[in-house]
Image (tube, rainbow, N blue to C red; front, side):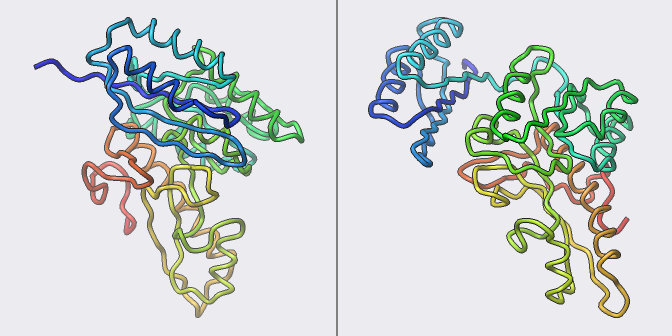
Length: 300
């Protein structure tokens, strides 16, 4: 029995008539079977993602890609074809701001062999962590324009280069809100850590919100980034207790930040090891990450 082969096709651009019909007809004519299709329009911006079975493809994969790009050019749409197959060890980009402990935790887990991947590039919105990248031998790029769209465009162009092509983008305390146009391009491949047990306390200063609301339990959540702020599919989360008799806000923040680093590392490891999948806005585990003998448990 022939093994089925899949590709993922993304189409983005200004919304207009005939986009879905154009691409689905093209795929049909090339012997491609569409197994899943998601599309949305946000503020007149069209985004479509297709999971395509190319087992019966009647042209070469390169030929299909060329035809898709030609159709995209005709409609003034950006098209990306992704085979979703890593050519070797998984590669990631670390997006950072000023806080060094979180990216350092990922790097340390890689060095220890618990995350079987490599950091291909570190991208910052200021120069603060360039010394960390240089010390670890990681290429560092800073995009610090006050115009967010310019920074995102620069990141997109950088990640198109073969030497910086990555399987995963890790927001290692990257203190920037990504636009819908950016997140769609890498949906299912951007992992963020948020300092609360989502969906509670989305947005900024989550620990302060929990502390001032008198919460007895707080935590952190690793999730995929989508177009909705802090509403992306939850990968993994853990909690810690707030002792109301003695814990200060600083104590809560310290507990939370230590937990964040462990949770983010575990989520990255699960992604790298292929232990999870995302479908229609929900994450599914292929096996439980609890007591997996790799990352520390919450009680450790």
